[in-house]
Amino acid sequence: MIWKTKHLNADMLQLREDFNRFYNSQKSQPEPAQLAVIGGGPKGFYALDNLSKFMETQPKDQLVVVDWFNADMRFGFGPNFDIALDDYLLINYCIGNINCWHKTCSDKTGNNRFNLKIWLEYHTSETNDIEPTDYASRAVVGYYLLDALMELLQNLPSNLKVNLIVDQVTDLKPNEDNNYEIYLKQGNRTQKYASVNLCTGNSCENYLPEVQEISHNNPDFLYLSSAYPPEKLKNLNKSFDLAVMGMGLTFIDASLTLTEGRGGKFVEEDGVFKYIADQVPITIYPFSRNNLPMLPRSPIYGPKRYILKYITPEWIKKMSAQKPLDFNASVLPVLDKEIRFAYYSTLLKTRDEHEVEKYMIGMGNLVFTIERLLFPTQTNTFKSHEGYNEYILDYLEILIEEAEKGELESPIMAAAAVWREATDFIAQLYAHNGFTGASQREFDQKWYPSLSRVSYGPPLENMKKMVALLRQKVIRFAFANTTKMAVHEGAVYLKSKSGSKRFTKFLDARIGRLKWPQYTDTFYGNLIENHIAVPLENEGYVFGGVTIDTRGRLLGADKVHEGIFLYGTPNEGNLLDNDTLSRTKHDTTPYWIEYIANNIIN
Image (cartoon, rainbow, N blue to C red; front, side, top):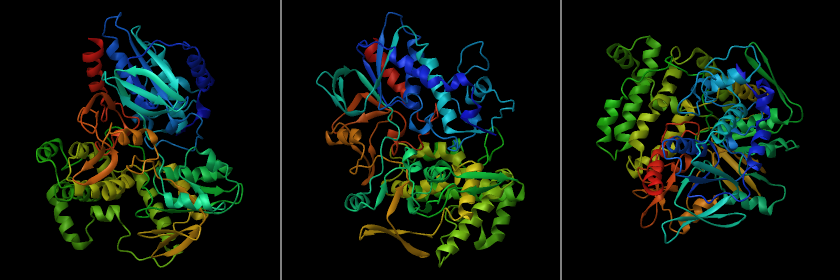
């Protein structure tokens, strides 16, 4: 079952109006604040919830005021879980894994702090049973987050006030009093803050200057630097060939928006989807570093999952003592060993190490490896667009069948599950330049994207829709192996061993990343330009983000900014895999609250 906004009760669908009334009821002249939180998405909400819990333990006459900044009114859920998104845009985790609270209630005898599954039980009129292995649209998750935010804001302790401010923060500067001044797009703000928490999420767009230059000089050239907001794709009303850079979850979002979002329909019969176009379709030509789509996955919840054999807490403790590590020499062989064991132990239905090893020896050069999992086409030659397109169609159809079996029955899905299960362990080794500079570069650019491709793919329904679009030739996987991109004569040319093609319409469907010095996000660019932040560097490898210490504090050119903390996506490169919805992963807010306790409360 996939839960959509049409399944929600009417009172939930009124949440935006309820929140707008709450926002408008704020004082026109709010009390001066000591703290600021920048970024209104889930991480900003989580930071405030943790602060609220702390303030409940403090004297009632100890007032703390927070200014919470966001560029728009999407407080609590942000753009990724916008309640206005169409219901075909799905989360890629089943609902049993989503909980925006540290502590939850199982019924309404306490409060309204529920995980997503229980929240749905109270807020849908559907008679179908709600299972933890169900999925939901991102808009439904947005309503869940907004309802949770209202629960928080309406029940703050009396000694905590939060001012919601809609404006874009463009700069942050310390002053001589060791406070921080925030500058806004709509004009300077002279308020001084004792501490600031940066929870800005994915606030950047990718920047391809050579493609942008064409769009400036050629009125017939269309350059879309991002797939969001979806409206700009839905409003395209002509038929053309579109080059799409990136094949991750954003590519799937873009493909569904360009089809279903423009009036097309998917009809399901016996688990197979057929696409019916409402108008002459845009033909989508995706390309990426390896030109391979993500693997689909069935819902993962509870104990029915692959259990790691070699990547264990004991191994991590041993390797942590040897940091910095050469990823290729110290970690990759064990990851490869784990993937081989996952594949063959599932195939043979045994976790007996000797039996599995004996079977693998008999396979010789045909043994399944991490390379075969991540780069299945590296030894293949495709002489035409059509040949590679047919290969990808067959590849996805086989993977859908395997995903439907699940990782306890399918060897390939068990192998793909290894990175999902190992990520938190490897993140401990990766943190704060835990790999050598050269091996972190290779990990960031080669291994991490490919491991994420096989382990964090879309739910089955959306991948079945991708297959339907492939059959209808709406999506064309035309470029095999490595693709070379060239820009000249007012167009983009894509070329690989399987052929080449000219495009005058181009979409960048990659997730925007902080990338110094090519910042399109002026806030972090200003921080570095003013030496308030320093680019993240590891033995000559410049990641592109900013540097933090182990407590989440921003590092400047000549000091640690004791009162500036980062939480979530801005920590990328320092920390691995900052899950947007996770309450526990890389949570730096306890250090922020410790600073507040020592420097503001006392």
